[in-house]
Image (cartoon, rainbow, N blue to C red; front, side, top):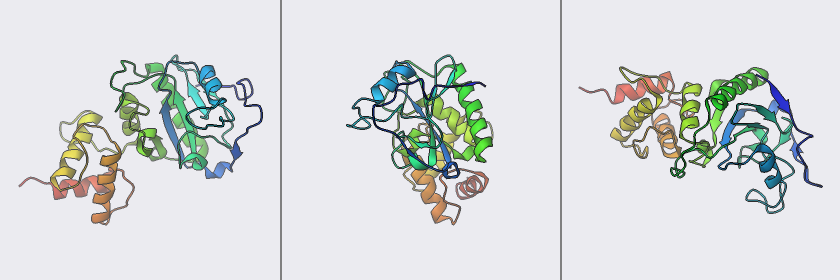
Length: 239
């Protein structure tokens, strides 16, 4: 994977600049979608003017990386920069935006999905950053896990959940969507409000997992790892 550095080539705001951090503060990677059909350069132009993120404009492209439809990876900011891509998470995360307007929760009218090249680059970039910053696959997130259910869309959400390895596939369940549905069904059968049985690991499902983990003295991380799954199976075992 090649990363094209365009930190200085992309236009900056005339006076505004990002705050900075120690690289040791980086603890997570968060994926986003553009939710439009612009280029990275056009998104950058939008960000350095008054916009939905800041009425006073952003200093620069609001993510650290952008991934074009052809899979090309662009670095737009230094990793020491605290960009404004995910409220409450900016000081500890790396933001990655995929160009496109992808189908997602609340954006079902779109017929767009990330390209195979984008997903390949997302995986390669994730593995590279995990290695550099000594993270784990469980440190890779989607914006939907922080309150934006449509971001970065169904297909990327499916990839993220699979990449994070937070689902243990069971019996004849062969897809991530089916396995999440199985978890939702079992949580609901125990009285936890996991949301609709839709195969999407959204905010309600995450909250239900955390409640289940708290009630059963498990590590409260919102991830259905081996111990959480074992306990869930035990408590929902059919007689």
